[in-house]
Image 1: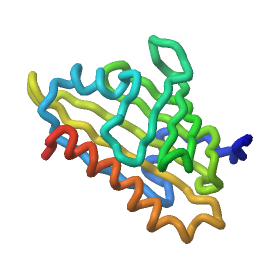
Image 2 (image 1 turned 90 degrees about the vertical axis):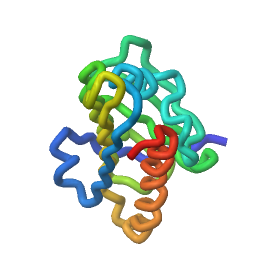
Image 3 (image 1 turned 30 degrees about the horizontal axis):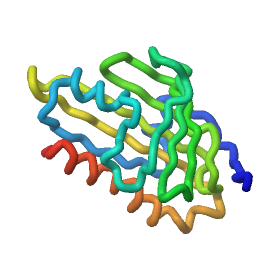
Image 4 (image 1 turned 60 degrees about the vertical axis):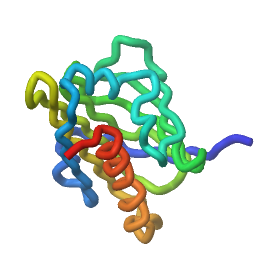
Length: 161
C-alpha cells in the first residue's frame, strides 16, 4: 500500500529561535567530541531512542550540506524525509523535514551542536523546533511529550548529566 506524503516547508537557522514550538536540551556526555560525533553520523544514529525505528542515510558519504536521510518512528506510523541545510563537520548539523507521512507539521527541524568540554567529555545541545499544521495544533502536547522522550533516552544512553 502506498503511503500518503505531506510536504513540509524549508527553514533556515533562524527557525530555531522563532518557531512556535522549540524544545532544547543540553547534555554533558562522557565521550570526546570526536566519539560523540561519530555516533551521531553512524549508519543508524540515535538507535537508543525508543520512538525511532530506524534512520537511513539516503546520501553517500562524506556527508555535508545537502545530505538527506529518512527517519521511521512510532512503529512505522511516521516517516520523515530530511534535508541537512547546515553541516559543520565534527561540530554541528541541522536539518528540516522535506515531507512527512503524517499531516502533523508545516515545518519541522532539528539542530545538533557538539562542543568539546574536556579531552574525554563534550556537551551536546539538541534543539527540536516545529510549527504544527493548523488541524494538528491540538496534538502539540502529545508531540512535545513524544519528542521530549528523545532527550530522555539520549540522557540515559550517555549516562549524561
